[in-house]
Image (cartoon, rainbow, N blue to C red; front, side, top):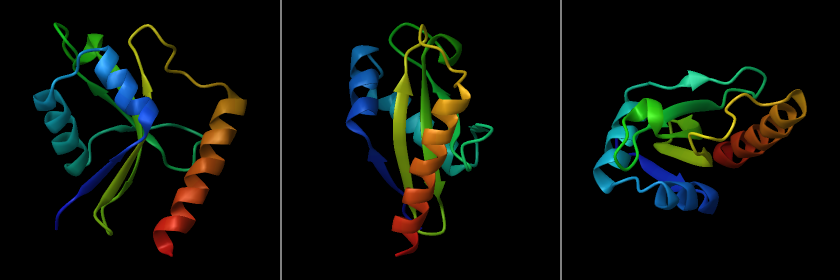
Length: 110
């Protein structure tokens, strides 16, 4: 089954600002298709994954928050965080992310 990756404009901006190459994006997409990524507690199942950036490996690159729906062949990349941005979310942020994930879940089921 093919997989469609839907990029939020925020994610596109973060990838561009950090010089993430097309090859690095493909590597991230391949990792997601193979089930990689860490579940973010309290978000209803959103995950985050590291992606390398210009002149840096994955640990120095960006973090991408995503919702994966392999059964329908679609992955939504919903937020991007640069290396210097915090990757631990407050309870309020997690609650908002959880609401967003529920909205995505409903849209995908429709």
